[in-house]
Length: 400
Image 1: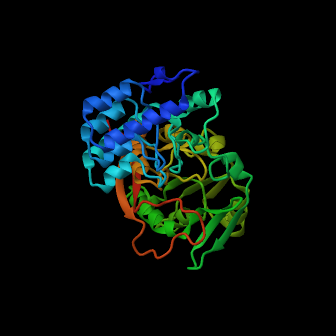
Image 2: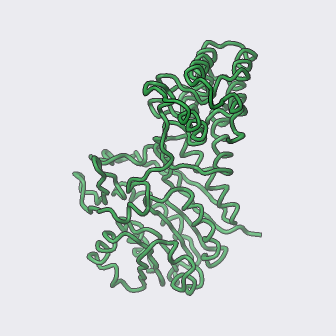
Image 3: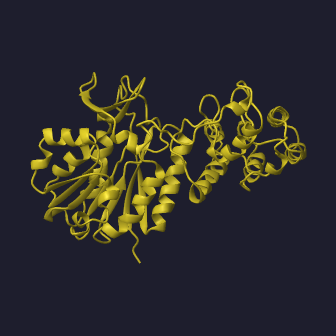
């Protein structure tokens, strides 16, 4: 059992789940009532679990954030409170602090997420209703007795999304549909059992346009034709923008694994474009191949892979310095993980910056307002980006 939980030793095979839940609910009430720090501390030492959530999904950390009790928030985090547990409205304690303009509490919770992201697996789906960090504890409880369906403990959340939207293998065997929405925007849709998910949609064009501008406009090799690597074609928005540069890229390598996207690319003539090389497969199949290494390093690298999680993106980060051509080269990626929740998005922003720094890449961020001037982005598809400001990353190699 993880040492991350201060009162794990209070849980035994014969522990009474209902009593634990009741202690947890009493702890939440005590915090909401503003009982003394010593009283709260004694309840936790007596075994009140920090993972408990009431019928609204409120946890002890949510309650402390609601009261804007900075000392209590810090204490609960130190005792092992789950920073990214969400209530029934999918709000974390950090979201509560943010809604109250409580910057101090928000940063305490956010920084706990950053520390977690630097030391453990970070899961991308912001609809997670109970943090995976308590899964081992809950499974231990569930293995010893039946938990009533109405108990907060029944809200155990699966660790991974095995649908085509969250599994690369499932995604590559799924069918995609290229069409236009009611506003004439090109969209690429993935059909799920009772839903459709936008793999890529026309509203992303402004993000891609500003990304290309920041990556390429003042690059010293622009007039000679840049060497560009893009991982993930989608609708081809960013690749078309690369092709429309004042000087066409001297080499433009596109890695794309999905058979329906490859068919779409053939129909649009991408296989016949001068200087364009299309590698059919996953980036893992090619990142150390002759097709990549023989380029001699890329001036620009961009990646946007649907269905891969942050751990896959982090592994790609590790290869970036080896396939950039030098200090003047630039790297960017579609920063969309956690983007249906402001706290998760903020955590991913900081964690990715730290992980890139570890491999020798410095990141500069700029914001793109994705709401401005867009009347309807989603149509009938599931929303996958809900925060107002897209954080646009541009990375360069460390200068020593």
